[in-house]
Amino acid sequence: MRTVLFVLLLASLSACSTVSNLFGKKSEAPPLPKINEAFKPLVLWRADVGGSSGDSVFVPAVDRNAIFAASQEGILSRFESLKGRRVWKVDTLHRLSAGVGVGDNLVIVCAETGEVMAFDEAGKPLWKFQIAGELLSVPRAADGVAVVRTADGRIFGLDDRSGKQLWIYQYTTPALSIRSYAGVEIAQDTVFAGFAGGKLVSLDLKTGSVNWESSVSQPHGTTELERIADVSSLPIVDELQVCAAAFQGRLSCFDIGKGELIWSKNISSFSGMIVDQRNFFVADDQDDVLSLDSGSGATAWKQTGLAGRQITRPYVQGSYVVVGDGQGYVHFLRRSDGEIVARTKTDDSPILSHPVYLNSDMFLVQTRKGKLYAMAAP
Image (cartoon, rainbow, N blue to C red; front, side):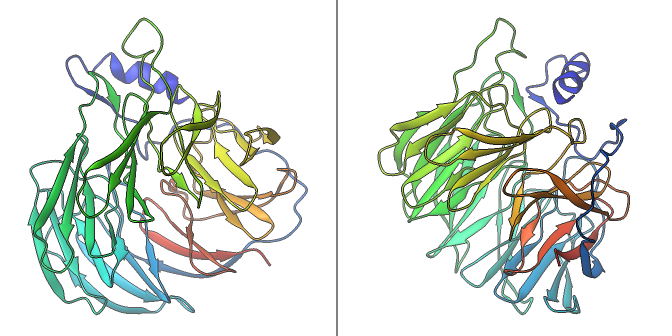
């Protein structure tokens, strides 16, 4: 379905250099699959944070027991996790373009005008940094460095106390690429980022110097559209390996220190994946969900019942794999065999961002209309 949408949109792009993934635009979805419902998902509380439109995808963030969420209109809010009570809200006086980033006791948001704004956890403004570029991804902060990525392939390292620029990394994007809200992952004092053209890059967090660069997938085909092989989702990192998936490409895992290929598998993914102790759970470009052995890539199961429903990156909640979809449903798949065992509806607007960990029993989803839901399996 997404490939067809890309082709239709490309006809109207002419000289444009990016292909939109049509964030949040409703299309005719296949009917919901019939299921043997094992339980009723619990909606523990809901809150209103404000809606969004266009290319902006808003993701809530959790730091200990505090939840931070933002709206495109510029309102940044903090909620407590138990009942969803709003603790405070701040008007940033800017239209925002991405979800909230947290880390190092900072709360960071990005404006449509390219301004990066940092607050403390009490909502007090700390610093601002102006970037000449479009900011679609969630910022990150760790070990004294705030990391911000632009839509054109630049990554900025900022001092997280003052907001001053420490370093910048520039990646040259191909002639045609997918517009994506994928940002960066930080682990082991390293920044990992996937790029258009199928590249995965490891950068030193403190200096921005390149540790290694590897190919997740090589572009193939004769037309520019066929040669799109972009890493459009976040890399997944564990102690030994870092893995990434490319649209119209492959899923590949690399040694975290040297960037040497460990294994690779033909899977095209736009939304991305998550990993537990033993398995990857991947949403492929047909909106099928797959379980793969994390050491070898062998397929354990594949669930095809959600094909065409524009599902999110999977999330693991206890015995279940959870995905949201473009019609506002949240689906629970049994982790052992992939059977869909429960689902619940939100507010009838698309769930664009992946479910977010709240605690060992609960997770969050944020809808396009701006409703924030805390959910759980009984």
